[in-house]
Length: 286
Image 1: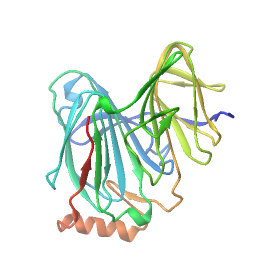
Image 2 (image 1 turned 120 degrees about the vertical axis):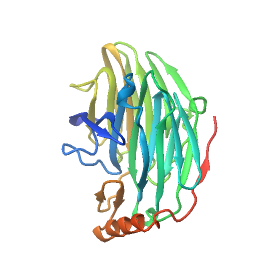
Image 3 (image 1 turned 30 degrees about the horizontal axis):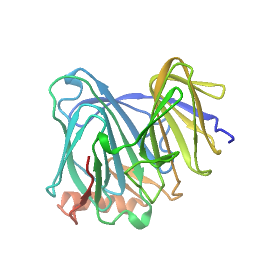
Image 4 (image 1 turned 90 degrees about the vertical axis):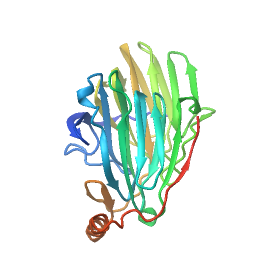
């Protein structure tokens, strides 16, 4: 396997979202607007309730998918169609907003560590106005494999014989959560042509000759796979890859479409209470 090297590194930019939740954003910033099919990566991590307790009250989405992975904490999802989800430590939710969803994500804890990620995944034009859908699973549904120096949790895609329960057939997303011991080496095959990145949320790793530190995202060049080596303190890393869509992206806040006119229509639909057209299907367990 010819491993991928680092094309560029991006530091997480502190931002405030929702009703004042403090987080770091790497994808979706002036430094890296998007990485087709990925639109945004937010990393929230705090044990100070003032940083997260206000949560994310009702807000709309159209034209893309959100994928939320809770490392630590307890967040409740509710939407205007009556769906309810309960994300706890280790769980994840894939939400295809598509033609329109209005939802909230509110902490169900008053203290302690709240930590996780939200990734935005684009939809191709033919799917942007399709029906919404959900896949949500608790921690026990995700396979975890142990290999020398590494523990691998598979959320989407596969690693060896382990396959994650959440599937995104449109972009074939791979999403691994890696725990690496000091100086441990890890490799993972990736489809050529898929865009890929790593985000280090504890410790540091080397990708070839490039060091990637805590709160840094590294975009990988094309190739057959990824190969990482943890630094002396070990590391925790997410490794994400997906098939590019290759279509124009026009984004304004929570709406992501292909043309400006479609963004204007999304605003009109939201203002006139027409954004939500179809009740979402919900799948998942564990």
